[in-house]
Length: 172
Image (cartoon, rainbow, N blue to C red; front, top):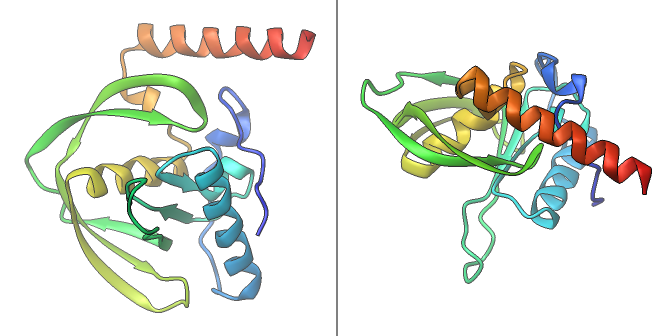
């Protein structure tokens, strides 16, 4: 397993729409293992393949707390079905938008159909933080960042600060 570089907004690759996975094989499992290692090292609770520059419909999630054993989940070609009519606010952050956190409104529950690490078809009823995290990561597959759910003013301010931070880091 290897820790990969995480793309930081406004990198244009983060706006790509990811392609469906044709086959879950050892090469894809290596990518998923690297994604998990990268997410843990960041540290984060979710990561989409596009965030490491691979435009495939793959996400990894682990909501285990620091005092718990890891509980990784792998979602290949995930699809959301039956989002709840009830929505809720959750303060979201993103490894591709470091150090910024804002409330985002999303459905509080949904069903997710996907292929697992072995390529087997699965269905999961998700609610609460898991539902939020899945929806956040799936947005990445469509080229959407959590800041796109904010007002234009907030989004533009965050992007300006990220660009400034990147210029300062490049100058060092």
